[in-house]
Image (cartoon, rainbow, N blue to C red):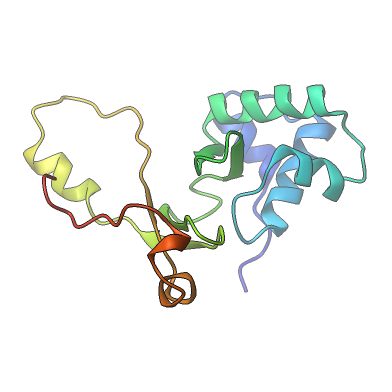
Length: 151
């Protein structure tokens, strides 16, 4: 198993402040296996940061590029550590039960070769559908099925 990254060094390298609260927050995110809500993070931190402070810290860490904000269309953000702390990836999200699976990103090298853009500064890519268990229960579990047509 890979050891815990040096979060203080990671923050300093990107110009961020390595405060005790931010370091504790990053260690809490390191322990998570999937993107989590701010409320869940607050609980895992034992209430050490109030929710307003937690959101400010998450916003600052996202701005520094060490935390990634993920939108699963639940009406609130989820958060996870970004590369280099975690391997770069995207997500498959089940609209029936909420299960989330990481998927590798293979598009970036192709974009570098074919894009008319000189710089790509950010991106977001989440896929939504039904996991096998929800799919077996029938289409009423998840809404429209994406076929890839028109992409």
